Amino acid sequence: MWESIRRWFDPRELRSVGTPPDYRFSLANERTFLAWLRTGLALVAGGLAAAQFLPPLPLAHLREALAVGLLLLGGTVSIRAVDHWARTERAIRLGEELPASRFPAVLALIVAAGALLLVAAVLLRGPA
Image 1 (cartoon, rainbow, N blue to C red):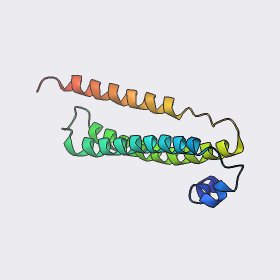
Image 2: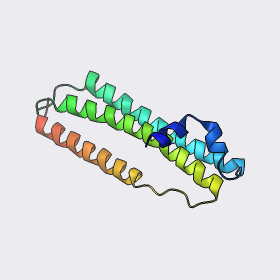
Image 3: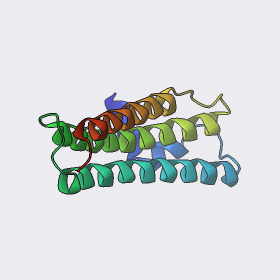
């Protein structure tokens, strides 16, 4: 694990592996990383917005749980983004198959579950 984390911060190590790829593949990998990073930032912003602007919900501490969940999910997405970028860049340089990931599906399910939880909270609250 620490070896993977070290690779995130050492571009020389990454460039010492395999052969230099067509730069377009590296740039595409970087754009994907930046898209994941934007997703993480959006989740963090959503967590802060939930903490600051949601009114108290009918279930005790639901607002705080949603806010903390979004903040943690945003951090997780950001860490996953850099790890996937490094693993993908390494695979491209080595001419290997790109790393598979279940993370997009898991993230989609978590976001959908959160949305359903919010729908339930709104319906439980009833008309204002």
